Length: 264
Image 1 (cartoon, rainbow, N blue to C red):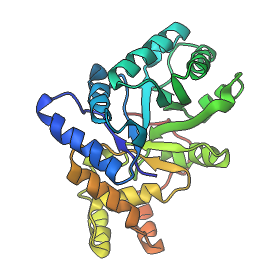
Image 2 (image 1 turned 90 degrees about the vertical axis):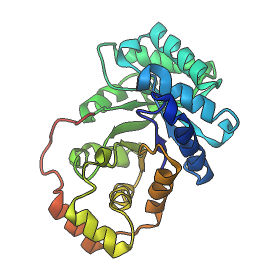
Image 3 (image 1 turned 45 degrees about the vertical axis):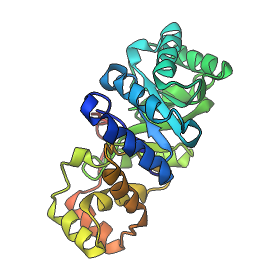
C-alpha cells in the first residue's frame, strides 16, 4: 500500500547520504515499492536508487518509467537498457509509460512485450492515463498485461474519484497515487491539523491515511530522509473515523462531474 517516490532525488550530491538512508529505511519498514523514472534528474534519481539498492535489490519492487518521446519500439528498448544500466540491475519489476505522447500505443505495447520476453521487465503499466485512454488501450493486443495506472491523487486533487478510480477498482487495476501530499502544500490546513491532533499524529499522516483508505490504491510519497520515511510509515496505523472523513469531504469536496485529468 505504501512505497517511496524519488522525484528530485540524486540531483544534489550533498543530499545523497540522506536520500540513500531514506530508501534503506523504507526497505527496513517493508515499504518495498521504490518508484523512479528516467526523467527524474535526467537519470540521476535512477543512479541514486541503483546505488542504494546495490546490496538489497531482492528486497525492492522497482518501478521506473519511459518518457513518451522515447516510447517507439526501438526507443523503448533503448530507454529500458539505459534505465537498467543506471539502476545496476538486470530486470525492472514494473516499467511504466510516463504519460501519453504521439507514439502509437500499439508500438509501445509491442516494445513492452519484447522486454518481458527478454526478461528485462516483469510487468508494465501506464501513468497519467484517463478513462478514454484506458478504453483505447484495452482494445489493443496484449493490453491485458497492464497492471497499474499511476496518477496524481490527494485530498486537493480528487478528480479521479468521479470515474477513473471506480473503473480501475472495478477491473482490479491498482492505482498508484503520486504526490499524495501535494508536495506538502496542504499540510497547514486547519482541518488536517485538528484531525491530526485528535489522533496524536501529523497532518501528513492524516493525508496519507486518507489516500490509503481506498481499495487498490498505493501511495508513493517522496521521502528524502529516514525521519520522513518513518513519519509516512506511521500513516498505516491511522484509522480515520466517519466523522473525520465527513470533515475532510467538507474541506475538500469530492468531484461532482467529469474534469480534465490533472498532472504534475
